[in-house]
Image 1 (cartoon, rainbow, N blue to C red):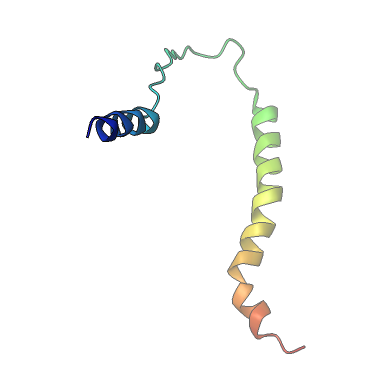
Image 2: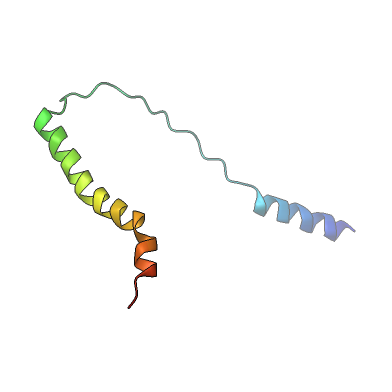
Length: 68
């Protein structure tokens, strides 16, 4: 019986979730705010990736039913 208790304790210790200390993150205002040109460039870059993907996903059913 003692061996069973020892084995269950080892198993419980192995399965215990390791506790990770929480990071102390603090946010401050940016030192250099983004210019309007950079904001527009970022919006254009993201839309150039996301809009074609959204269009393809919206028309997947059309692609499935297309006769070959």
